Image: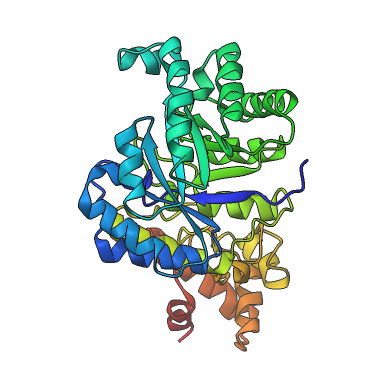
Length: 370
């Protein structure tokens, strides 16, 4: 594994807002940007300037607000998209080209047209921006010989980074790793970025696989917000790299809960209660076997310490609770009861929970003891 820190690029304000029905206000964008900055994200894709003056105005405000992150604008391979980005004061530009046959044909173009646009677009961009990223749209479905030619030409004309986009989420962890091993073999030492979509539910896993295969950067969104099934989740990738891959991405994990909550509210997209990392259920336990062990060691049935993410282990009680777990928990709270009272409480607790189809917290259990 490449132990170099994965560079995280957040694109919530660009690709995340492209999700149907999602509209961030001016103030919401500034608040989200501020929280991303607090969380330690080093680069934001702040928007698409060609959308108009209002978009340019908020991008301009973000760029000049004194945040620590670098701000990158996104656009198509056209002069007008880059002129619009230049008006914001941006020094960084991501230029997107369709590299798969299906994407080219969908807009009435072909491989020859794509190749003919690289030199003039890169020349135009170099005159206006200090950093040029090139997006290989739908790279996961592109012919590899053409992808090689495309990347080689972009590098020749000065691309600083190439985005490898799994635009409709067709990759899996093994094919992702194979693709990046191929890329790093043919273009050793170059900065590739992975941009994964979640259509088949593998965006986070694919991003981790890309990183393990040597990919240096990844573009992500908070809560996986994005078109269709969304993008790879910033909070999941940051956590997985830390816990599973033992690599720190520089993200302050304890800031993620608030960040995800604010994006959820602004996007009107609820966070599923069992969503990894930030769902309300991920540190909550009912099973008797689990609760008994968790009292002694919170890592016995949790992949990470909840405190690292600004959370707490929550023990609740219901149909699946046992006397051992309840006894340990009550003792940890300074409540001592007899074996008979414990047995009676467990039976009553199971009956109440089964009828109500819900769990009980500590205060509700105390009521049963009276």
